[in-house]
Image (cartoon, rainbow, N blue to C red; front, side, top):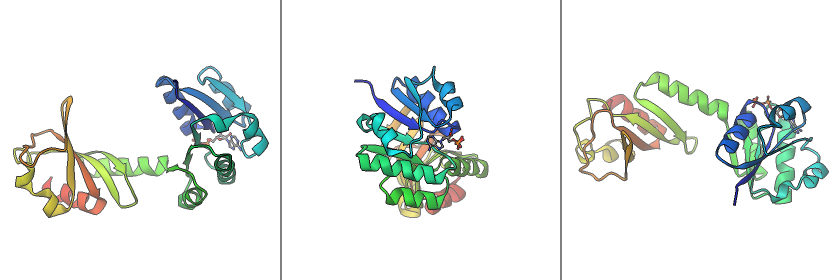
Length: 218
Ligand code: ADP
């Protein structure tokens, strides 16, 4: 069965989610209260509707409850974003992902039961700052406020050594959970697996510990 999603708010963020979900083969109901925005997505989304989602009756009439996942991508209008989320939650929508405009907004969204709260601008800022600071940090996935998974390129200071030689877990309190090598990926590498120059290490741990590792070992 095809996956079905609703995206509410067709700005840059919501719009790119619609395009990508469609590209991945999903059915997408795209909603915005601006006719212009809805027009723009009429040919892209499976269905597109002009609606103000802060009106409970409107949401009910669209049958949104039957979709498995709703993405609320209303940007700056925090009030509309919160109210929409609240209505979706009360209707019993299974999965609700909401874009937060700031930390206060995120706090409220979590409190009222949003399943996933995302901060695309903040996360992208963090990612780019990390890339700028270290040529070896390639990507970054935030797990909590203090923990992440980072992709780190192995340089000549650690290449040729095995995980046990480097003793990373004991020294830094972080774990290498995978090694990407060209097209292949070694999941849960063994202690005696050797790191090669140019390998990409998938490292999980506290941000401070990973940064300590990057600064010292690389
Ligand atoms: P971005 O930063 O992702 O570009 P925008 O703030 O430009 O975000 O986009 C948010 C979208 O949400 C706009 O297209 C706006 O018309 C839409 N929107 C705002 N309030 C509502 C609402 N109550 N119901 C439906 N759509 C809304």
